[in-house]
Length: 174
Image (cartoon, rainbow, N blue to C red; front, side, top):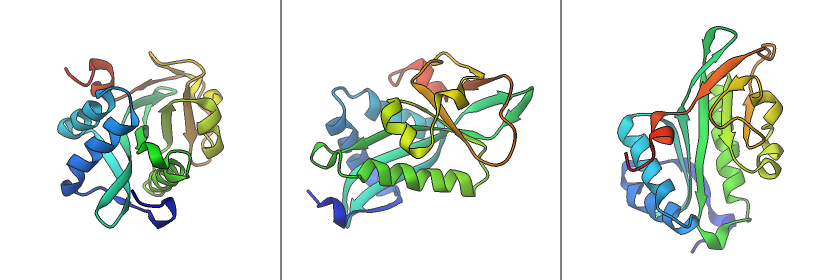
């Protein structure tokens, strides 16, 4: 397994598919996240797919997928972050953070207005995610674990809706 200092973040390539699946299966107790990644790819909902790798060895993976977000009556450009996976020996070594920072930089540079995440607040707040930013958006996932980060100078919306890609609501095996 590579040392965390030897890793670099790069866009996923078609030849990475088996390694990406293996990373998700190693990082999570079930195959649900690995199946979700494949379904998002198959459905064409993946906007950004990044890996943390050394040479040909993939040690981490992250997806950004398209979301349907409406704020104050108009559609907004938004992505959902996740799943994020890192092989167990390199968890808590900065690999996931590097993937997230890379993904957020891409989202900002490509004109996205929001990135949403469903996860542990204590972890994601360090990147600028906030439950308060997500609070105006009706979602089946609303609550303290649904967070968002907003890019740009637009005022916070008064109300809206946020829907993840169908693979999230239908289940990875559907």
